[in-house]
Length: 121
Image 1: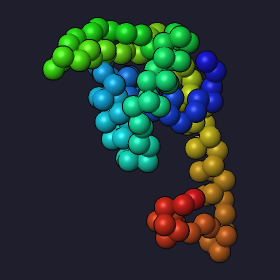
Image 2 (image 1 turned 60 degrees about the vertical axis):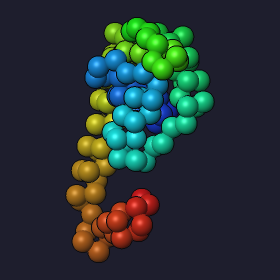
Image 3 (image 1 turned 180 degrees about the horizontal axis):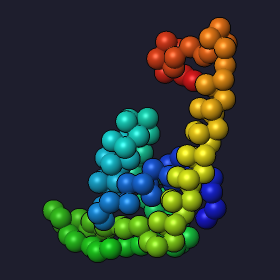
């Protein structure tokens, strides 16, 4: 899988850069990391997890039965870590370039703060 990553993929890999997580744990971690901007549904998540396993970016860590249901934990693979690092660096360079350009704007041409636009930028 190459960068740029789709936003849900970026957040799933970011969530799994910590300890192994099961599906619901990933959903909660993605919501927390994205500050609520991304809310994943189980069907969407499990389809994405299957694709990420197939691409070798994540791998199953372990399984356990909780309340009669199988809970599978996932972890970031070495390839997933490298992909996340490359995407993070790409995004950092993008932010750096945009920040430098915005710093050169005249005061009259500076954008209105995103909060003043209702969070839209």
